[in-house]
Image: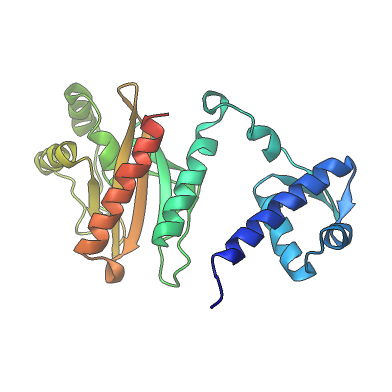
Length: 248
């Protein structure tokens, strides 16, 4: 029987070998040199080098590779890292576990903005553009953040904003939103049911640090793949993931 667990381990070892080799050379190196020195097939090496460049651990100029800025970040304490850098691995991990589009949103006034996003690999999927902003009531992440606000600030939002209906299912009435917020505060989980985009279900959970919302993790799932079991699984993964930031 083939031990399939060995393949990811081998890939991880090769990745570390590449980083160590490039750093040790103290000069730009080409892929052929790395392949020959580490006896890595060119097809595998190409994928690993591309990944390392994408993540910033190597830099590429033409055909030559040098250590990248991502290596310095590995020695940076969490308090010195940008929020996007802190949440990106968690967003990626959620996407890998669920294979659904996963994002981290932050509040900007009465809107939420996508700070980090990872898109599902399914053919049928919902894509979120980095930097995309939408009204708080439109996304599950926005509702999750609304539920963290003090009552006075929540009432200010309900009074000051004109809430548009993105779809026939969008909740815009103040009384209905208050009921929804009360339920989110009770469970910690916010939902949108085709309220921003037809055919898309959203689930989100806010991250609380120092008594305030740092932002919210959110997962967008096409309705055809959504059921109670999926909902419960996503909610639990969101709870665990948010806790990782809250207990740093």
